[in-house]
Image (cartoon, rainbow, N blue to C red):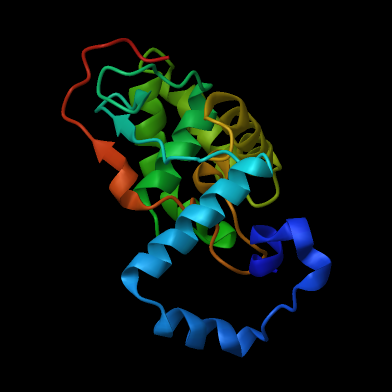
Length: 192
């Protein structure tokens, strides 16, 4: 498939190597050949309309304001519960089993209280209780809202790495490399 993408002008004349051949071919290539191949792939992807997506750095302060690309960058406008869920998953890159989400209740309450400091503790407890309740759909609703908002807020082609992903019985996680998440000590700005 890779060869067809690169040379689709004459795709009918090409014969794609067998899968096992890719590794052998790549091992035989010199660094300059690999770099040239990578450039051709990037050019072909651009021609197909796939953006040259660069990861967005997230800067998160002690009040859990999430800023894009720098400590002074624009804040991500997320609703408090949606933001609390996102922060929880960013804090746990290993993932979270949905059936064990009640284990994160206290942490979620602390995050939510920092995001929304004027909310009464009873209201915080009730909202987080719904989020971690296995019989309530609140978690799925908030995860869906988050994933949709990320599509709107992040550059084209980058949102998938920031969304909550997973399958039943396996941990849900945000696949973003943790090196793109920066936890800062600041927090004097009002949260969104």
